[in-house]
Length: 150
Image (cartoon, rainbow, N blue to C red; front, side, top):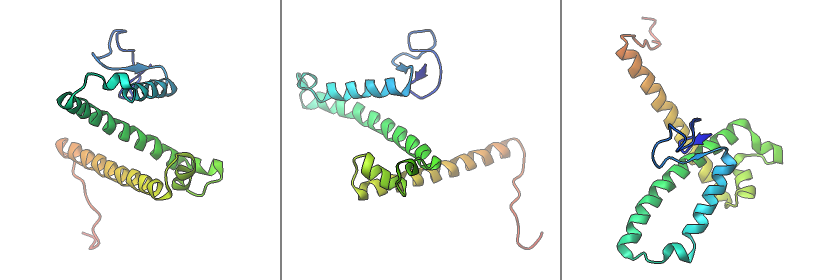
């Protein structure tokens, strides 16, 4: 089973899942649940009884969900791009594949790939910085290469 944060572990309610943490048996199962969730929120039944202030609360939570979905999208796009999977369909680039298969305009597809790569660079930089901090805490010294040979 996979928890909402992507970690393998017991299902919520099966001893060990955090309160409110959804668990799924597969990515396909999570995607089906996500589709059902979006369908419900777009239905007239979901909007019934929500006035302006209550809609604000819903928008706040939807913003949090949107951020988590964006992170998941970027992660899967990163893996897709790194594996060169776009070539299987005969596409010359990940952005070309996204434009054709992901129902994005060419401009939006290029922007999505650019953003994914930018975030990936930031992640690598953050990881490198955290490693350097950990080494400093352990008393290890990071020695940079010097051009003067000293």
